[in-house]
Image 1 (tube, helix red, strand yellow):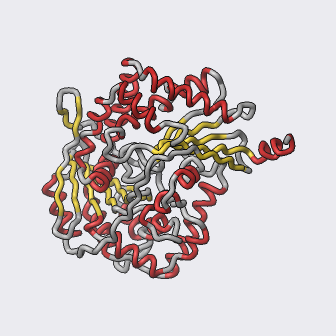
Image 2: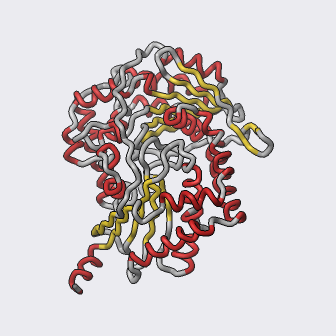
Image 3: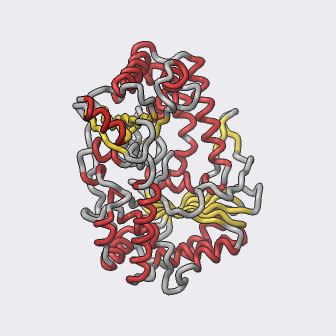
Length: 460
C-alpha cells in the first residue's frame, strides 16, 4: 500500500515478538484472552495475557482522528500525533524514544479517520517506564512555538516525500475520498494542506489535547507477559489520577450510498504508466454486509489468485497489478463512511473504459452466479490465516484489541471476526456486490502521465 499519514519512524511491525500460544476454543478456532476494566476516570484498560515470552505490547488508542479535526485545520490530527512525541515538562523532547529504545523496545504512532494510536513493544521489564511516559503525555505536553514549528516542517516534508514527490501521490486513498464523499468530515485531506498546517497555533494544540486526549477518550491495551490483575493495577497506578475531561460531541458523519457515478481524470508528472482507482461507498460498521464486503474484496483483488488479477493482469494483460483497500484502515477498523477501492496500474495502450468494463464484468458474474464453494473456502482460509498470524504478535494484538474497544466498544469483537468471515456465503457475496459495487455508487479517478494527456490533447 502507498505511504499513509503515519510518522516516518519505524515500520509499524518492526521488532514484533511472535507468540504461538493463542488459546484454542470451539475446536479448531483460536481465541485470544481478553480482560477489560474501566477506571473511575473513564480510561478503558484491556489486557491479553500471554506468557510465552517476557515481552509486552502496548497500545494507547485515542478516539479522535481526521474526521474530528477543526475545519480549516486539515491535517491537524496528524500534526498533533507528531507533537505527542515532542516532550512534556517532566520528560523533555527525546526522552520518550531514549527510554523505550534504551530498554530494548520500539515505538510508533499513526493517524486514521476515527482514531489515533500510539504503540510500543518492549521487554516486560520496561512496561512501567512506558506506562509512566504514556500517562505523562496524556496529562500534558510541552506547548511551545519551537516544537510546533519543528513538527509543522516535519509533516510538510513528509507530505513532500510521500505524496507530492511520489508517482500517483496516494490518489487511491487521498483524492478518491475527496471526490466520493459529501461531508467535510469525510472528504477533506487528512494529510493536510500546507496553508492549514502553517496556520495551526499553540492555542489549537492546547485545545485539541484538552478536548480529545483525556483518559475517558482513550483505551490502554496490554498484550504479552502480564496478567489482568497486574495490568489493571499498573493502569491505576500511572493513569488513575488523571482527571477525565469533557469531550466534544462527535459530528454526524453518516452519508448514503452515491446515486450517480463520478469520473475524474488527473495528470501526474511523475507517473510512467496510467492508473485507475475505483471507490465504492461500503457497508456501515456493524452492518450484516461488513464481513461479506471484506470477503468480496479478497475474491476480487486479494492476490494472484483473485478474479481481477487472473483476468486483468494474467489473462487479458490489460493491467500490471490489482489491489484493494478500505480507505486508510482495514475492513473492520472504521466508524464512519468508508470506501472499498480497487486500484490498478494499466498499460498505456489500454483504454480506462476497457479496464472498467472488465471490472464490471467480474462483478456482474458474482452478482449473477456467486462464488463456488472451493473459491470461497480458499479465500476464507487465507483471510483467517492472516488474521490469526496478526494476533500472534504481541504488538499487533494489543493494537487490534485497543482499536476494537475504541471503535466497537468491545475488544472481544476480535474473537468474533473469524466467525463472521467463516459465515459468509455465496449469496452474501451476490447481495453485497449487487448493492454496493454499482456504477451509480462508484467514483473513478483515472490518473494519467502528464505526457500521455499532452499527446491525447494534440490528437484532438
